[in-house]
Image (cartoon, one colour):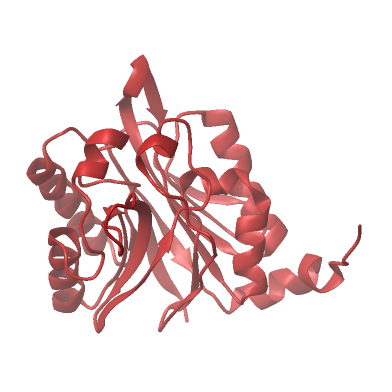
Length: 257
């Protein structure tokens, strides 16, 4: 099944309503270009500010962000990967940075970020397991931002059957982003749809942009550069079988000490 996937890229500020409005405008533009699967950047609604985002934690299934994404998915027959600070299930525990799949029929379980970066450790709890989400567009494995730098996360998703890896990100280091996105796609024979922030970042730094669609052979099919917009390209989960025959990393993988 061939369809278009898009990875959004946006500059987010502290105004949640403004961020959501911009995200919806970019999403709708990608849909006009034919996108059926759209991946949002990490913490796109609150902006990437760990202490502020943690205070805005909400439910992945019934919060304001998922409600707006559900309306869009249902109305236009879309699959949207969102990212939020997710409210903890137990009182007196920290929220998590979580991604979730919104489909026309509803919202999936959330996939929690496993490896926390820098100040995130002070405000969020880490996830403990990878998840693969079933959809009509294929089996989707979320790899949240910093988790891209740990090959084990994407490999776990691939071993569990993922055909597509999706990465909502707030990435600042461009050379690592370029290498990690291509390597995770190639070594697992998966499509990778990676969304990112662009523009000023905390601490006087800058987000590196370059949201992209990467083929299972590691080729970057479309890159959004360093301005707001989106990367978009045709993907076909069935082609994963051909790539894994050509580069049989998963079948040749051996256990060793």
